[in-house]
Length: 89
Ligand SMILES: [Zn+2]
Image (cartoon, rainbow, N blue to C red):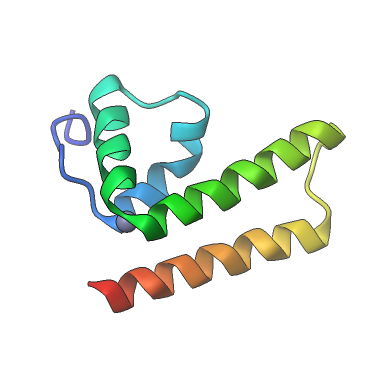
């Protein structure tokens, strides 16, 4: 289990596991590592916050697929986040 043994996550790891984290689909160790990273990294907190808000919005509307403008916003937010992360490295 290569992923479960890693305890220090990079911003890239966080964005990769973000959806699984929200759905409680991660192993406990990875979950804890995510929490630790989110605690120390404001940018990833903002990223998760946006993701969570979008997910809540979609759940509230009971949509099978996000409307195009929401999808565009998710993509834009993801791009912005990864760009900021790169600048931060
Ligand atoms: Zn981060």
